[in-house]
Figure 1 (cartoon, rainbow, N blue to C red):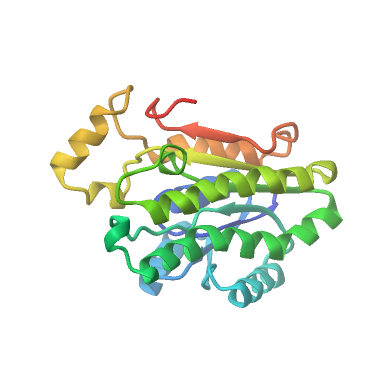
Figure 2: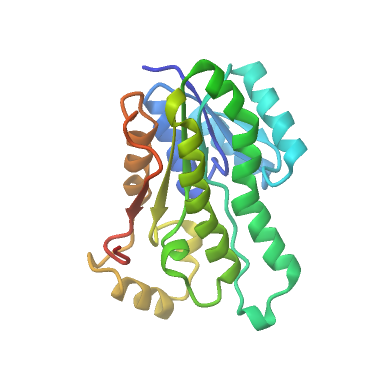
Amino acid sequence: MTGRVAVVTGGTRGIGGAISEALAKNGYQVAANYVGSTDRAKSFQERTGIATFRFDVGDFEASREGVKRIEQELGPVEVLVNNAGITRDGTLHKMSFENWDEVIRTNLTSCFNMCRHVIEGMRDRKFGRIVNIGSVNGQAGQYGQVNYAAAKSGIHGFTKALAQEGAKVNVTVNAVAPGYVNTEMVRAVPDKVLEKIIARIPVGRLGETDDIVRAVLFLVADDADFMTGSTMSVNGGQHMY
């Protein structure tokens, strides 16, 4: 039981919710961030016992206040999982600036905001584990997702650069790039489209949240100190490089 404080952004549903629950079961003090439905977050907290904190990770000052509140209630943040993400799909020639900006802000700028507000403490304590959730579509691209692919691709570059800064003070920074995972968002895809997606996955199935959770649990562990700047691709072989 480590007792380390772990923050998971977008941590009350889907992949983020599964990560929050797994960290709690493994002895971490988890702060699950959310910005959407308060009723859903309340239900999650009541079911799991995990503390939830509502603030917009795409907003620099809101993130500062959110981290401050978490540290006041739980203690210094030693583990950060940047999982928050949204989609606003559409081809570029029809995409509004608002749909571009909202995705970049929520999916990529949030990583800067959250890391900026915890990195100094991690460096001072000479311990930190940061895991950024990327995507197979940030590695391979995807039709109709220039905003999402750009944000997720940016996460992979951000991860490598920050890893170099933290390496000498035992602050590791890695990424996990999920493929298509059996979550509420993916299940909402029309059946014919979903069939085509699965046909492109060599193992012949969607991923499960546990597939992603196992990768995150390894990367945040104390003894994962020789792995930094890496991206773990958990996609069933859909994209190999």
